[in-house]
Length: 108
Image 1 (spheres, rainbow, N blue to C red):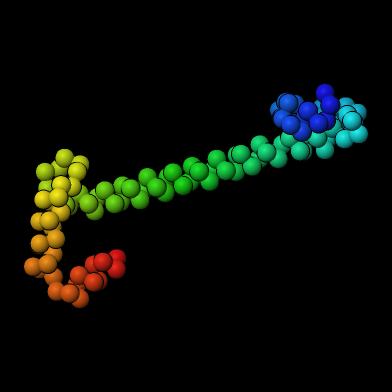
Image 2 (image 1 turned 120 degrees about the horizontal axis):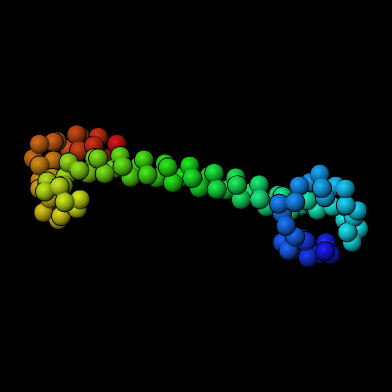
C-alpha cells in the first residue's frame, strides 16, 4: 500500500509495530514510522474517551446533587418544580430570612 493511502487512514492501525518494523519502507517512509503515525490518532481517541467518561461522571454527580437539593422544593414528589411550588418556596424564604441571610444563601 502506498504511504499516502496509509496516512489517509486506509491502512490497518492494528498491525503490531514489530511486524511493520520487519517490512521494508514503502514509498520512502519506514514502516515503523508509519505505524507510529497511525497509532497517534488511536492514543488521542483513547485519551479523549477517558476525558469524556470523567466529564460524564462529574455531570451525573452534579445533577444528582442538584436534584437532591431541588427535591426540597418538589412538594408533590413528581420530579418537577411547578411555578406554585417555586412561588411558595420564595415566599417562605422572604418571610423567614432577612436580606443578609438571603444573600448568603445565594452566594452558596
